[in-house]
Every structure is written in C-alpha cells, then in structure tokens.
Image (cartoon, rainbow, N blue to C red; front, side):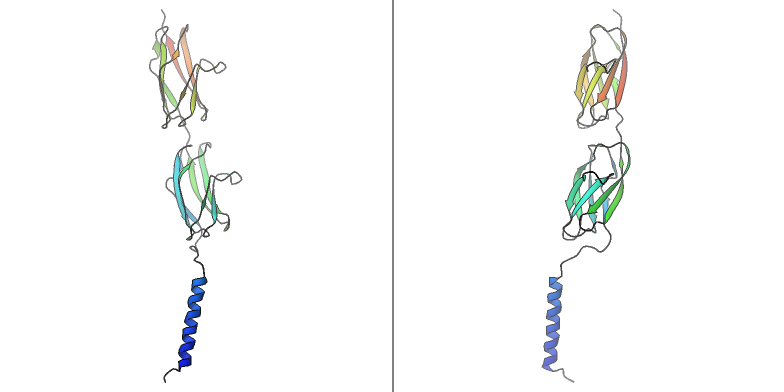
Amino acid sequence: MIPSPKHYVNVVRTLVALACTMAATPATADSGPPAVHLQTYTGKPSQTFSFSGSGFAPGEPVDAFLGDQTADPLITVTADTRGEISGTDVAVPFLGAGDYKLTFVGRTSQTPASVGFNVQGFHPWVVLRSYYISPQSGVGFAGEDFVPGEAVAVYLNTRTNAPVAQVTADSDGRITAENAVALQDLTGDNTLIFVGEHSQTEVTATFTVAKD
C-alpha cells in the first residue's frame, strides 16, 4: 500500500517540530557531580598552583575556599558553556602548616567539589661567614627557606632593642649579606637573632669575638 501525500506531510511536520525543539533546548553540562583536579596538591604560602574542573552549571560563578568557607573566596572563576572551570597561578595564602580542604562551590548549583591540599611550613636557617671574628670586624651571613620577599630583621643578643640590620628574602626565600653587622665594642660570645616579617620564626646564630 502506497502512503498518501497527507502521510508525508504529517511526517515532515513532525520532523520540523522535533528540530525546532532541539534547537531551542540550551546545551547542558555533564550531568555528573562537580569534580576538580589540581596541578599540585601541596605548596608553601606565596607559591602558586593551577586547577581544572567540570560538572558545574554553565555560566555560573564558582568560588574556591581553602579551609574556612566563611572567609572570602581564594578565587572566583566562571564556568564555561560546558560547565568546566580552570585557573592558573593561584597563590597559596599565609596559613599555618597542615592539611586543608580546598572546596569549589557553584553559586547556582550549590554543589561542592572538594580536594585535599597540604600547606607546607617554612623552616628558615642561617649560617655565618665566620664564627670567630676579630674585633672591629663585621659579621656576614647567609640563610634559606624564609618567605619569598619578606623583610628579615636582625637583632643583636636581644629582641628588646632595635634591629641592627634588615635584609629582604629573594624570590627563593634566601638571604645573604657581607659585613652586615658591625661589632663595635663587643667581646666574648654574642648571638644574632633573625626574625622574618611573615614567617615570624626566630633563628639564632652565635659567634665569638676574639680578644685583642
């Protein structure tokens, strides 16, 4: 039996209606729950990391929190039309060393995605150029693992007096100086005390002034 022309007309109408419905339906993100992956899962304050994720609502802002979610977001990014997010050069904030939860929350979907992140601590140390120094000479030193860019105050024997010198850690957290501290009329054993502006870790090094 040959279908009537009316049958073909109905088929065409149905196909046209279906095509229009599909065209009007916006693309949606992956129906799976949000998931995030990091380029690294550990770092020191001021170091950076990158991330990527998927499963968020298309176009929604996504806030990232490290630890407490009542504080301001570490960063806010916007999901693309596929519900994917990414970020680079995100600085690790100044938090105490330990394990934290890094949580990404879409403002529309409100479904969190969390991963673990370890914040490493700083363990600065200093060595002197010499530990037995002649009178009227200067003391030089070198140190590492301070917070990059932080000011490091140098005290002589006690922190109750003003610093006798101040240096700035480089981008790798290193400090160095030659003849930075004049000995003046010192005798016997003396101690230099190094205190980082951000790390607040006290490092000491003792030297002896030779007799005339």
